[in-house]
Length: 246
Image (spheres, rainbow, N blue to C red):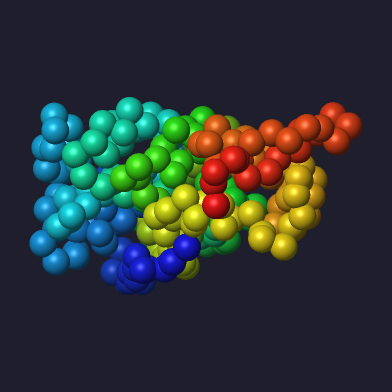
């Protein structure tokens, strides 16, 4: 794993906040796409092999996907036959919720929302898209981010938000970027000190995550051909490196 694709971004203050109407043109996806498009030689929204690609870099295609990675699996695997593709997936680890007063667009309140998401939340998505993991010419950037969610209490939003309507979710800060470019990078997510075979409980304890999420990690890596089942421990499946994978 490497941090070769680490990025940075600025954040606006309340005084710099544009009118509500402008927020429709912003967002997390757009901000990340613009960050990668800032690289030398980059082009945005370019047709390649019959598909429109978010960012084309010299020697690499970039697709930013904030959710539902499975929906772009076929597209990515198709493009990977032409040249390397990097999937950029942000994981929101902190959300600052700002509520706007509908009377004058002023800031009425601000608070940080609790979240339990971390790097391994990636596998909540990949469990439904295992074929892109460690696939030839497919690379990943897992980007941990803080976002600013702008809401307005106009009664048109979800009852869960007490009528608040979400206007936008904008990138506030990139915390870190981890690149998974090779099969060794993906296998490196399993601690080398962990004796095999291992189950979801032992892997979860080693990674500091809950067993259900660790189960998704194991399932995904097995479907990708990096791990294989190695029996059972009670009701739990045991896993170890697949034959020939190092």
